[in-house]
Each structure stands twice: as C-alpha cells, then as structure tokens.
Length: 373
Image (cartoon, one colour):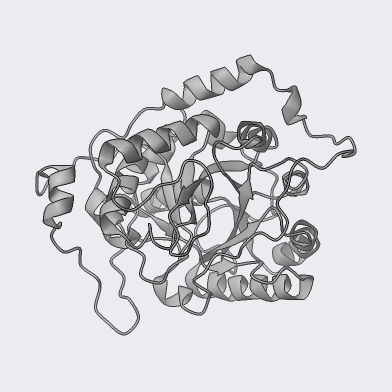
C-alpha cells in the first residue's frame, strides 16, 4: 500500500530533522513566485516520459491506490520533538482548548500502541531515484545529509522539467487542483523523485494560495475532505507541506486537524516555517507523529550567488545537526542549474543527498541496528 512504511516510520525515532535553534537565522517568510504562468509553447523534446502522454487509466489507477492507502492504526511511541526553543525550556503541549476539545472529541490518555514494522520500503518509495551519491545511506554520514525540496509545481511542466533531470534524490511539492497538478505528479514519480502535496493554507496577508485552501476555523470533517480531494489530484504523494500558511500554521486547532489527517493517511508533514510561531510542534506531539522543518529557503533572492550562499547555510546546518532541509521553487530560473553545478562538490565534501522518506527510514533502520533488533 502506498505510504504504509512511511506511516510506520512516522512513529519511530525521537527527534525531528532540523532543530528549531538552527532555523532562526533563516527568513520566516516564503518567497513569492516571480514567474508562474501557463505552459510555455514550443518546449523541446525530452527523454522523460511526457506527462501529457499518461492515459486516463493510469491516473485513475494512481488515485485508486492513494485512496486505498492503509491508515495508521493507533498511535506510536514517538511524538513530535520536545527540544528546547531558543532561550527557554522544552515546550510542553498544554491541554486542548474547549473549542479544540469539542471539535476533536475526548482523547484516551496514556495509550501508546506498538508502532507497525517499518523495515520494508513501500513500492513507490523503493522506486525513488536511487543513483548513488558515492556514499552509503544512513544517519550523520560524512558531513551530514542534505534534502532538497522544490515547491510550487502544478502550474505547468516546463518549469518542473529541469528539476526532474537532476541526478540525485529530490522531493517535489505539487500544488493541488491546478491544470498540471496530476500530470506533474505523475511526471515526478516517473522520474523517480519523491512526491508530496503542497497544501495551500491561509496566509496573514491577502495573497491567494490557490484552490484547495485550508483556513482558520475549519472543522475536522472539512479539513479532511479538502486534503483528501487535494491528494486525489496529486496521486502518490507520501508527504505534505504548507503553501503560504502564515496564519494557518500558527493556529493550533487547524494544525491539530491537519496532523491528524496526515497520521490517518500515513504521510509525513513538513513545516515550511513561513511563520516563526508555528503551532505544528504542539500539534504533532498531541497526535503522536514526527514532523519535519525547513532549514533554509534557497531562493529568497533568485540570483545564482544568493542561491549558492543559501546552500552554504544549509551545509553548515547539516554539518552541525546531521541534516538540513532546503526549500526552493520551480519558478526560480537559475536554481536547477545551480544545484546541478554544485552536486559534484557536495558529494566530494562528504555530504549525503536524500529525501525525507528515505532519510526517515534509514534513521529507523539505524535505530533498530543500534538497539540490537
């Protein structure tokens, strides 16, 4: 089933990927696309399968597999990180507010069912780009693990295409319910890259996040229905991160509903950290799932020099903390070529490149080995 092993790994291990202390030097605002448009005419032929050539039966099959993905049955022993925020003690999850408690219903305290076995990769995850970086997979190898996430796919194919040609593991976040959402999702999977849903969420300002938006005040049923609809247009997604969402991710009630859906669907949640006071850590602890955080935005400034500097920031964080998640965008004109140019140097310097799901499962395997199981 799609996401079964990912669901299991969500409740293994004890820490999230990037410590909050390391995040504070990075901007807490998602850059805005400067060039998002319709499909560019006259694109040259490429070796990748054309997403336009994927037949309707293939789409239907992918969507059916997604809907049939096994939910995580019961919570696990691992909860969201309780590492200290800067200048203070570990943040504890306070009791749910009356509004949240009424919406979510009573919880049974103290239950921690055994986590499912996560030793085997699911079929989709196993098919992710496995070309070696000349380094073995595992935790804290060399100078750390770099994870590149590319947001905002779904508007067209020509912007996504160069990222799918990159010869290393990559995660692509696809916006839902757009003209190219399903085509781009299938192209990502055909290229062997990791696919996640780029879930639109309410910002503080008046920007429009696009169709399928989650807003503050939505109830559990509405949140679940919207995410399910969005996932159906991004078939095969193994995770989810927020698009915009500076208002939504700061709202504890809404993020509890979002993390509950992620847990039930067996997918992970990546906090893009578009706001400094994100409620995701508390929500993840209450739901008993792991979560992940963006370390660096690669293209707050889209010129090559700024991108290289952002990668250097990510490298320093990975060397210090063992890993770093760096988020860029498909509309960033120089980003794909810059990453391609930097790739040999990253490997030579001893960095391992991975995706979140592969890193998560390798951590689980390392924990299992260290415990003698």
